[in-house]
Image 1: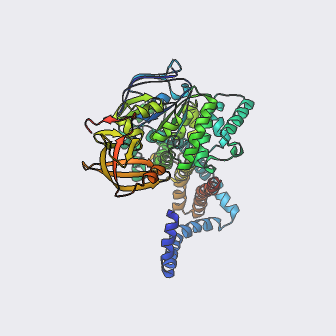
Image 2: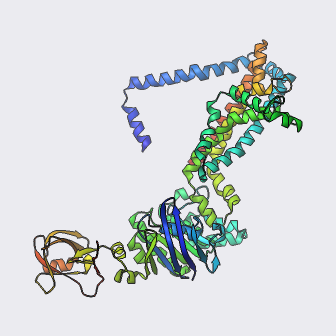
Image 3: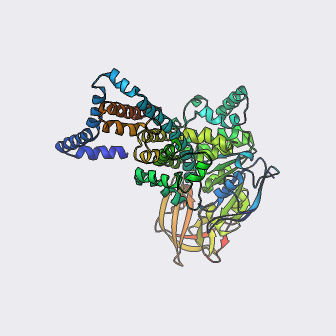
Length: 279
Length: 322
C-alpha cells in the first residue's frame, strides 16, 4: 500500500523534474563513489595482473594482509557472539540501565576511531596504563600487539551487528519463542531452532558490515598497533606507508584488494538475500 | 481436578491484573475464561502455562505442583491469538516440533504428524510454509502443533480473535467437535460471550482481576450472580427499576396490571429479529427485542402505543446502584 502510494506521488512529478532528480542522484554517486573506486582498480591493474600480484607478494605487504585477515576474523567472531547476546538482552529482557546501555553501544559510531585508539592506549599500555602493567606482568602484551588491534577493531565495529539484529528481533516478537517453550524446548533449543533462524539474515548482514568495517579500520588501529612493519602493521596501515614511500603501485594493489573483499561480501549477500525472501 | 489455581495474585507495576484468584478446572472439560479486555483472563491463562509467573499463589496441574515449573516442563499445549507459527518451517515441521524436541523416532513423528494433519484437515498443505496459509488454517496448524505433544491441558488464548466473523464461527463449531473427539482438558480465553456460551462446558467470568461467577453456560445466563455477569453475558435493558434482557419482555397492545406503558420510538429489523426502542411514560428508553412474527402479528411499528411487562420466570436484577 505504502509502495503504491509512493509510486503515484512519484509519477505525479513532471517528467523534467523526475529526470533532473535521477541525473542529480546518479551523478552524485558516480562522482563521489563509483568513479574514485573504479580508478583505484584501474591503477592497480595498469601494470598488469602479474606485477600487481608480485607487489602484494612482498613479504612485508603479505604479512600486513595476513594480519588484517587474522584481526578481521577475531573481530567478527567476537562481535558476532557479543552482538547476539546483547541484542537478545536488549530486546527480550528488562533491566535497570537498559537505555544507558543502548546509548553506550552507539558510542563507537559517534566517536572518532583515533580517540578510541588513544583511550585503549590509556587503559592498556604496559608503562603507565590503568590495566596494562598488570596484564604485562601476567605475560600479555596488548598495546603494539595483536590483542590491542583486535580490541580496537572490535570496538569500532561493535554496534553494526547489534543494530542489524535488534529491529528484526523486535519485529518477530517473542510469540514463536513462547510457543517453542510451551512445546517443551529449553532455552538453548529455542535459540537454535527458533530465534536464530528468524534473525538469520540480520545476523548475516550484520556480520558482513562488521567484516567490511574491520577490514578497513585505520585510525584506532594506527594508534594501538604502533605500526611496526612486519609485526603489527595491518593492510590499511601498509597502504598509507607504501603510498607515502612512493610505492604507489603497491598501495593501489592493496587498496583494490581491500575494496574488492568488502564489495564481494556485500554482493554475495545482496544476491542470496532476495531469493530467500521471494520463497 | 485437572488444574487447580489457588490464591493467585499478579501485578504489573501498580496495575493489579489478578487479585487472589482461585479456581478449579475439571478434567476433560472445555472451559471458557470470559471477561472484558484487561480483566486478567489472559494473564491467568499465561500463568497456568508458565509464560508468566504469579506474584503469589499456587498452580497445580494434574496433581503436580507447577507454580515454579518452566513452561517446557508443564506439559501444556498453548495456542496463541496470533498463531505464533514458526515462519521458517513447513506446516508438517511446525506440527513435528514438540515431538522432535522429545527425540521421538522418525517413523513415530511422521505417523503422528500425518494423523494430526488429517484431524485438522491440513494434510494437503503439509509442505507449505505458514505464510501460504489463511488465518483459519494457521490456527488449525497451531492447534495440531499443540496437540502433538499430547498435553495434559490445552490452553487457547483468544484463539479466534484474529479471524473474520465467518471463519471464527466455523472454527468455533469445529473446536467443539474436536474437543468431543479428543477430550483433552481445554481452557480458552475469550471476550466474546456468544463464543463462550456456544462452545464451553463451563464458563469462568473474570472482571477486574477477580472471578465474578463460575458455572455452566445456561446457569450463568439464567441466574447471573451479579449485574456485571448479567450485562456481560448478553444485552440488557432497564424496565421499571429492574434489569432484564430485551428478549425477555412481553409486548402487549393492551394494558395489564403491572405493565409499563410506552410508545415505540424506533424499530430496527436485523434478520429474524426486530429491535424496538420504547419510550415509557416515566421518560425512560427500553430496548425490546421481538421476533419478526410477533411484530407482524401485533402490527408493531413506530408510534404505536404498547405495554411492557417482564416475561415471567426470567433472570432479572433489581437495580440497586446503577
